[in-house]
Image (cartoon, rainbow, N blue to C red; front, top):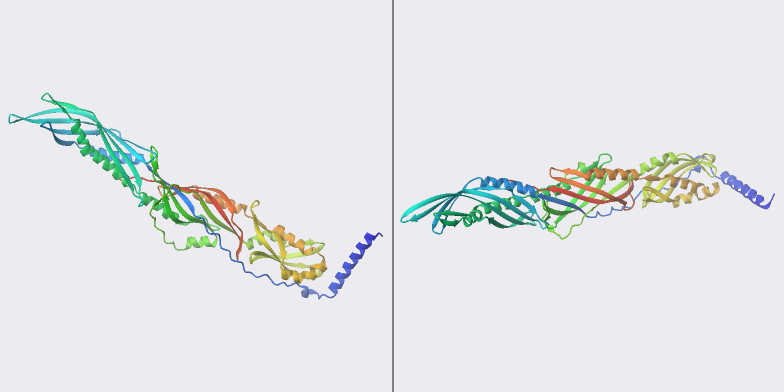
Length: 491
């Protein structure tokens, strides 16, 4: 027998004798039970991070064609009535009876929100000249036709009280027309210029300016503002609710193109996703008092994008159930059969406690171990785990002699088993949350003239917190959120 073999044999005999001696002096049965004081079930309260204000882009559009349609219809009704006038030119009294026939009105916009209106029209009718000759009034009647074009330029401005103020400038171009009465050539251009300026132009200007001023921007934007304050159900079970709290609203100055006048707004708001009991309470509680739409603030540029906090919570019982088939069974720990009977999880301070109830039939011993570890979120694996469990000091003190006598490494192996199996994936929950949120905001009608558009561009964890009920990981969802508002005119 060589020296090495002798050393191993002596060590084995020594351990056997130590075990025999140890258990000769340890009472059997229930007195061999390890009872360790449990770490306190008090979680260090950590509030969720404050929400970051988001900006919801609101794009209000006023189709110029709508204004044109209403104005052209109203102006056509007005111009269908003949116009009678009386003028004096070169001592000759001229009575005229004129029919105006409007052509196709054109209305185009420009990038600075200017609208240019052109209305060509024809006129025809008759004129009767009266002249007193030698005390006798002589009358002569002639028919005439002519053409004219009225050009109206409107510069639109949005005021802080939500009204649209048009500033107008009118120009009239009339073809020169001449009539002869008794061989005297008389220009009717001036007559009809005054006719258009006095009668047609004011009505044209009044109609278009009035209809644009009637565009009710405030009511339609207020509808968006109010709808944003209503909680939106994302899912029934578990309850998930999207909640927005609008804070303020800003606008850039009006802009446009050939077909549309644009109002670019930004609603600054807090946006959160509530999950679980707090979401159910939000849906079942009385509606909160809504904030009225504030006056506009004007800015040179608008921010964009949203930040939504969505705290996903995993109950301790859910993790216990997941780990149960892997942990609550017989384990071969260094050749000693050890049965794990129950695994219970809870929070203590800022650490996760794993209470392991075990028994060792070979030694008629049983007990409760407590492991303490700090849970972490693995962003790559999208899972919660504890990478380093340690025995609670009170447990370690009670088990010190017992664990050393039975064989070093038994309980560390049990700790490793618990660490390996206490892993909870959040990938499915995150995927579901993202898909559900996209369905809610991707292309959603809000009333008859508002459409909500949104994307979810990224989902990132903020931190990991322990609560009395489970583990909570607030995720920050970021993307874009906008509302399309169709503005119209009323007759």
